[in-house]
Length: 379
Image 1: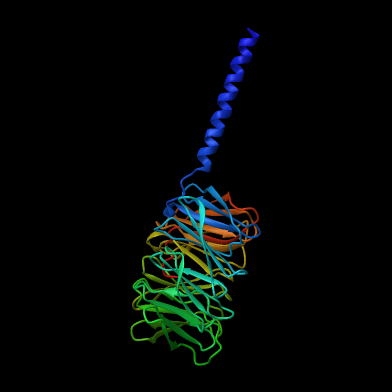
Image 2: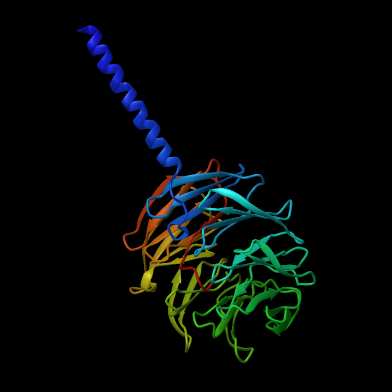
C-alpha cells in the first residue's frame, strides 16, 4: 500500500513537472509577430529589449542585444523591430516572427534622432551635434540616401504625402523642407535673428499648418505649408514646449515649461479654447479618444495631470513612481503608456477612468520606448 501511494505521488509530480515545462515552453514561444499589439522598452544600463503585450502589460519576449539600444522603433505594418546605437553608429534589425537579428546597417552619421514615417516604411536619422541626414528603408534594411551637409537638427517631421520632410534649423532660425524625390532642401525664415533654439516641428492633421516653438523668444509659429509664410504667431510664455496637435485634428495644444501655462486653440480659425495652469516643466502630451481626456506630464519631474477637454478642468492628478522619458497613446486613444528613466516599470493609464497601474519591464529603467501603433500621429 505504501509503495502504491509513493508510486501515485511520483506519477503526479512527474505530470506536474511536465505541465510546467510545457507551459514554460509556450510562454517562451509567445507570438510577437503582430506589431499592433506590442510595445517595446530598451533598458537604460543592460543590453536588453523587452517586448510587451500592450493590452495585458505583460512581457512576452526579451531580446539580448549585441549593442546598447539608444533608440527603438517598431514598424506597425510589418514584424520588424529596429534599434540604433549611437556609439558605433549602427542600426540593428530584428524579425518579430523569428525573434532573431536579421540585419546590421553601418550608418555614416551618429543616430542621435530617429523618426519613423507615417507608413512605417522609412526611417529618418539626424544628428543634432554634427549634422547630416540618412533615410533608411525599414523593410529593406538598407540606406536609401545620405545628405552629409544636412544641418544639425533634432527630430524631423514627415508630411503624410510621403515626399516632404520638415526640420528646424537653429543656426538660421528657419524651418526647413526636404523634398525626398529630388533630395533638395529649402528653408523658410521664422525668426528675425539667427541662432535660435527651435523645437522640432509638428503639423496639423491635414498637414496644412506646420508648428514650431521658439524657446529663445517664447513664440510659437504657425506656418502655412502651401504659401510658406507665417499665418499666425502665438505668445505662450518664456519656454514653450514642442506644439502638439490632437489625433482628431480639432485642437492645437501649447504649453510653457517655465510657467506651466497650457493653451489650446481650435484649429482652422485658431480661436482660443482654454487657458489652464499646470505645474512647471510640462513637455509631454498623450491625448485620449475624441480629444477628451488628455495626459500631461514632464521629463523633468514626476507629477502628471489628466485634463478633461470638455469641462476644461483637471480630472485628476498624481505623482509617478519614476521620472518619465516618454509617453505614448494607444491607437484607440483609451490608454496611455509611460516609460521611466529610473525604475524598471512601465505605467499603464486608463485615460477615461483615470486608473493607473504599473508592471515590471527591464532591469534598471528605460533608455528608449516605442509602441507598435500610436495615436501620436502629428508630433
